[in-house]
Image (cartoon, rainbow, N blue to C red; front, side, top):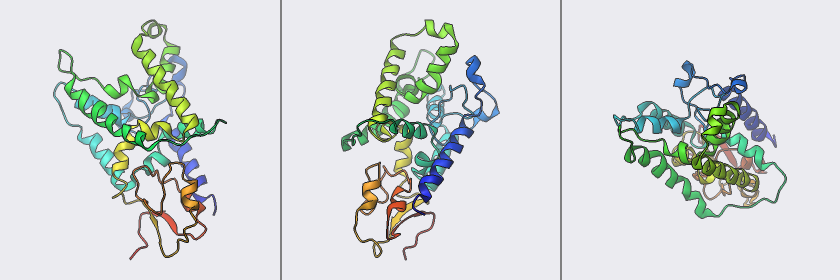
Length: 280
C-alpha cells in the first residue's frame, strides 16, 4: 500500500500522455493533425502545434476565441475548465497533464535540487490575467484580431512540442527564425533548467492552466483531507510533498496537485484523497 498513489498516478500520466499524442507518424513530415478531434480540448497543457497532438490546448483555444475580431466569449473552453476544476481541481495537473509528466521526468535528471521561493508562486496568476485574458483582447491588429500572447511570447511547451519539431522538418520555417523565436528558446532553456533543479518549475511559476485549476482546489469534489483525530503530528506528509505543501495546515492549497505522496507516507492513515468526505 505504501506506493499506492505513486504507481497509479504514473500509470495514468503515461496513458494520458499517450492519448494526448497519438499521431506520432506526423513527426516525420512535420505535419499537424487537424482532424475532428482537434475541436476538443485537452484538460492539460499540450500544444496544438505538436505534430503528435490529438487535441487542442485549452489555453490556446481560450486566447483564439477571446482575441477574435468579434470578441466572442469561449463558452465551451470556459465550461470545460470549470467542469474539470470543480470536479478535480489541480488533480488534473498531477494526473492528466502531458507537460506535467515531462517536467517530472526532467526533475529526475541527477543534479542539486532547490526549493522555490514563495513569491514566484504568484507569477502564474499575473501570466493568466495579462497574457491569456487581457492582451488577446486589448492588443489587436488592423483587422481587430488579437494575438494569443501566452502562446506567442511565453509558452515553453509550445516551443518544445511544436516549434522545435516543425522547424526541424521545414527549411522554410528555419529561414524565418527571428528575435521572437530566440526569446522563446531562451524561456524554454530556463524552464528546462528550472525543472531539473526545482520540482515542476513551470507548473508552479508560469502555467496559467495551473493557476486556473488551483483556484478550484478549495471547492473541488476530489479533495484532500486530514482526519485530525488520527494525525500524530509526525510531519512525514509535509516532508514528502514536492510541491512544498503542508497537508495538515493547508490541505486545499492551490499548489496541491493531489499526487497522493502524503497519503502514501502517512503511517496513521490520517491523510486521504477522494470524492467523499469522512468528516461528520
